[in-house]
Each structure stands twice: as C-alpha cells, then as structure tokens.
Length: 425
Ligand code: GDP
Ligand code: IMO
Ligand code: MG
Image (cartoon, rainbow, N blue to C red; front, side, top):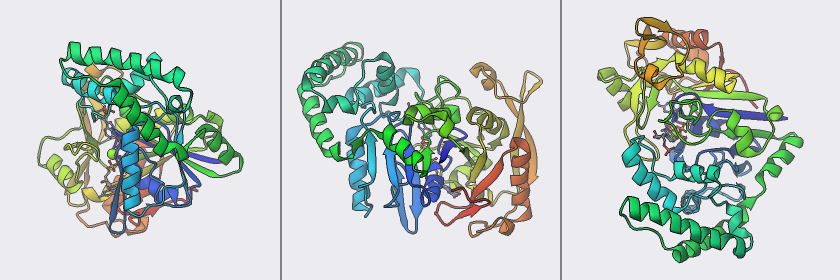
C-alpha cells in the first residue's frame, strides 16, 4: 500500500497544486478530501496554466484517476464550468469520479456567505463554503445522492429549506430570495451532466489501496485555516489537516504511509486574521511582486511576510509531517538579507509554541534570525548542489527548526522547476 497525504502547512496557497501535479505523474489516484471551490490550485506545464478549484490537480495525466471525495462541498455549476474549461484546454476528464455523498453547495449558500461576511469580516471567498458545511453539520443540507434518489424524499425537503433560507435572505437582509422550482430544474439538469462521474468513491479508493495502487490525497487550504486548529474564527469551515483526509475520503488512518507538508519559503495569507510576520514595507512589497501573490480564486492581493518556523513546527505536530516540500524559494532570489521567525515575544516572554488564544497571537511579536541572501537566479537549478551556498544554508536552518526532511524544493512554477531530494512514489 502506498498512500500519501499532501497538505498546506501555512494559510493556504503554498503551491499544493504544483506539487500535487508533480507527484501525480506516478500516482494512480489523486483525491481531494475537503474544501470546495474556495480552493485555487495552479499548475503550469510548458506554456499552459491550469487553475483548479474542485478537480484534483492530477487531472492533467490521462491515466491518473481523480476523485472528489465525500468531504468536498460541491457546487455543481462550478464543477461543470471547470470540466468544460479543462476540456477546452485539451484535457481528458474521463477518469474523474465524484462522491455521491458530497454535500451540495446551493445558490442560497453562496448568497448567505456573501451577506454574512459583511458582518463577520472574515474575508471569505464567497463560494458558500461555510453555510454549506453548517447545513451538513445541522443535518439540513443535501448530498449529490439526494438528487439521484426518489423525488418523494428530496423535493419536499428542498422546498422547505428554500423557504427557510429565503426568510433569512429576505427578512434579515432585505434581499431577493430563490425560486424553488427554478432551483430544482437547475439542479436536475446539472446532476444529469455529472451522472457519469458519480460513484461510491470510498469504495474505489479502498479497492485501489488493496490492489497496491499509489494514492495521493490533495489537501486544500492550509493548517492554519483548519476549523479546529487554525486561527479561529479567521479560518475555513473544514479540516485541511492530514487527519481530515480519512474522514473526507472515507479511508482508515492505518492506510496512510506518509504526510507531506507544502510550505512556501516565506508566508502569505489572504483574507482577515492575525499574521505575526506580516510585512508592511518594501520587503513585503517585493515578496508580493516577485511571488505574484494574488489569490487564484478571488484575485485579492495576498498579505506577505517572512517565513514563520513557529507555524511550521505547529504544522509538523498537527499533521504528523514526514516530509516537507519547500516552494517559491526563487522568490527570495533578490534579497540581500532574509529572515526566519524562530519564536514569538508576548508581553516580554519568549513563546516557542503556536498560541491557542487568538488574542495572544495578535499580541505576539516575531523574533527573527537573519541570514544572508544569495542574490542569484535559482530558477534553473535542477539539483540541490546547484543551489548557491546561502540558499542551502536557508534550507538547512529550516531543517534545524522543524526537524523534517525537505524531499522536494520548488524553484519556479513549472513542473520542471522542482528539485527532488528523494523519490516519493
Ligand atoms: P495552492 O493553492 O497551494 O495550490 O497554491 P496557488 O496555486 O494558489 O498559489 C501558488 C502560486 O505560486 C501559483 O501561481 C503557482 O504557479 C506558483 N508557484 C508554485 N510553486 C512555485 C515556485 O516554486 N516558484 C514560483 N515562483 N512560483 C511557484
Ligand atoms: P487553497 O486551496 C488561501 C481563506 C479565505 C478566508 C478564509 C475563509 O488555494 O490554498 P472560505 O471561503 O473558505 O469560507 O474563507 O479562508 N481561504 C483560503 N486562503 N487559500 C485557499 O485555498 C483558501 N480557501 C479559503 O481567504 O480568509
Ligand atoms: Mg490557492
């Protein structure tokens, strides 16, 4: 058996799409287990760029099976658009499978996400993610399978939900609600389009593992956006951490062999919430510009700061990381001096562990280690030995601070710009 979970170690956008695509060449199966179209995973191959939201980043390989697991909240309209976009880019999507248990993101979820975010100021992606997961937990949501089962069960429940959601939208927010009949027709059309892809995906993954196939679980978002372990309430509504893979794909924890944490060589965050190493100066601007740090899903400018080793150690603990994939090391190429946060100072006391309280986190000041930059273009490096000594030193310090080996190092967005320290599959 060979099952690997790949997760984001920071606040998302670490380059999970690029690393997943890289590993997918040898994987038999790539599985998304949480999140929804809030994710934006970019893959660049030769001159083509692909932006994936719901579909796993293994889709570019025609023989790799791609699975949208039961833990992913599915906006069928978005999924159909994404399929059509990929097909127009020449990608074969016949190997995609979607869990019949996946919760449906409905138009009223997106509307309520928009309306509520004005009050909560979390800065969500407005893709209906929080309201859909809330309905799932509240047992008032719908699954893809509901649309395939007998109409007698589904239709009255949907009608009642539309009524209830319309009350929130119309009476609290004074905006226009939704027409149940129109919604029902739209959903029925969408599910017919998706019918060939719908399956019992937990069973498919189980069978693949039993046959000794290589399965890669692709996390969306990142550790600090986890609903339980992230910077609550400035988080997403699912479990991006490695433990989420078992629940969100329907597999047991004993099948997981390895957990890879994808970590950007610096830190970014999109949306609101505390960010101890955030920079509001020329260095921050340089990271933003060189890293082209704009959200893949929303186009928002990402906040940028130095690498935070307190966060990485937290990610090691929460995910049981066995490997790190360091990405965007090339973005640091022009800096004369680079910094790594090794701990926080809170009210004069040194803290080494990520604080539980958001108030404490907001009051933390980063303690930095300064290192000389390499001021050299590393985007052509294909082997570790080709990296300049100061870049290697930077990586060594990260190793010393995390204790986790760096199996992959990315020096550019393209598939080919990846240094492999150890074969994974
Ligand atoms: P994801 O959500 O974790 O998949 O990350 P995103 O795709 O949202 O953001 C990462 C961005 O960085 C994308 O535009 C990638 O093409 C790009 N990228 C990934 N790895 C590297 C790298 O090593 N160097 C550079 N310069 N860009 C990278
Ligand atoms: P990928 O998979 C970065 C952030 C949003 C917001 C918070 C809650 O591309 O790394 P949500 O719409 O999920 O309710 O928003 O989470 N967020 C992400 N930030 N990368 C992502 O995905 C994100 N998905 C959600 O900006 O702060
Ligand atoms: Mg992203």
